[in-house]
Image 1 (cartoon, one colour):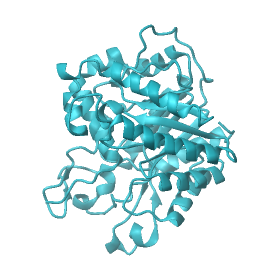
Image 2 (spheres, helix red, strand yellow):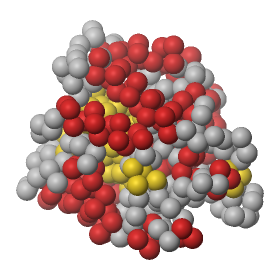
Image 3 (cartoon, rainbow, N blue to C red):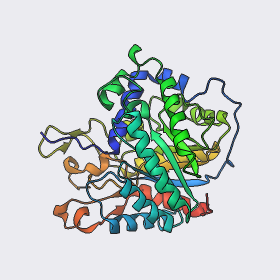
Amino acid sequence: MPDVPITRRTVLTGTAAAAVAVGAGQARAVWPGAAAPMAAERTATPGRLAQRGVNYDTEREVWNPAYVRREIRAIRRDLHCNAIILLGSDLRRLTQAASFAADEGLYVWLEARQFDKDADQTLRFLTAVARAAERLRRRHPGIGISVGCELTIFMSGLVPGRDWMERGQNLGTPAAEGYNKRLNAFLTRALRAVRPIFGGRLTYTSGPWESVVWRDFDVVGVDLYRDASNEATYVQDVRALHRFGKPVVITEFGCCTYRGAEERGGEGFMDVIDWTQDPPVVRPGLVRDERVQARYLSELLDVYEAEGMYGAFVYDFIESDGPYSPNPRHDFDMTGFSLVKVFSPESGRGYQQTGHWEPKLAFRTLARRFARTGQPRP
């Protein structure tokens, strides 16, 4: 039986598991608060996002620097983004992509990731990223760091469990009691480790079940997908983020490319591929519809602009391991979140061989929107 690939989708799976474990109502009640919330305060001008960007995942089977440079150039020049979040656990890939992004004049957030490592291992990698980021910042001041992503699931030691899947399942149980206190204790350690060696802005990529004390961070960072469970309160949830009195960045939002995906949000890719088959196939019943993704992203950007968010980052630019096919059973692109589509090797335009990709409707929709907004430095 083929293995399910471990990519950024792993993070989305963990997010979904945690949301189910904690319960949507409880998650909204605790998220993402400090003990004494501040009065609501806007930190950006309504109607304009200072940072408009995408997530770019460096965890992929194909890593070709020429392809990466070309894709980052397209993010800046064709999609008209002025910022990017680079995800990954390979320091060489992160720094290489960051250098390409810096050359294009993008503001770069480096999101250091380590699946299932303990606190000490996570801190060692984070400090290595911070040192590399500071070297790059000497010639390109627009560099920031996210000190982690949804660590209650993806780092061992905060919630019981042998791996991220078990921790996601345990999150809402009595065994996980006190996880927010343990999370904030680690984040304090992370800040103390990074601040002396890195002079740029710091944030943390939080999940909606995590209650982060944001006092010593420069920017509030939240992964915030809209789905059927939070659609009624989504605007209020976004607005509530101003209570911390700091700039707020939506570090992830996105939608798959089939009818009904807008109701599933970050869970849109789950249970839509039959991994028991060899090769895997898309389960029957899904209908590709690029309008769903484009409309979802536009609606959420409307919310972020109206509510004065500082920045927002679409997940994600490209998923090179999920090719498009005219055959719905093999159209893995529609089960993913990417703004562009790649093709299978059999098409003669396979990504590994050619680096070829084509923009989807969501890409063109965002490009027009971002081009109208302009490109000041964030």
